[in-house]
Amino acid sequence: MDLLAGPLELFGLFLLSYKIKWGFAVNILACLSWIFYVSYTQSTFGLLFVVIPGIFINILGFLKWGNHALH
Image (cartoon, rainbow, N blue to C red):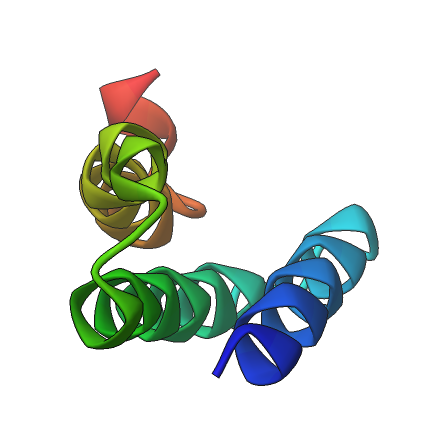
């Protein structure tokens, strides 16, 4: 699962670097993959301190995309 989550996260960042909104959605999938990985392996619980808030930050970024009234 970590071999899926890592590349997904990098691909999401790549999309965002080209100003493609769907990079946020890819990053959310990566965060969910990391959560599954932590629950499956019962290790690296520190990842949860990054990926759980990351889900909400990516949702916020997706919702704010192009809405200049929220800036």
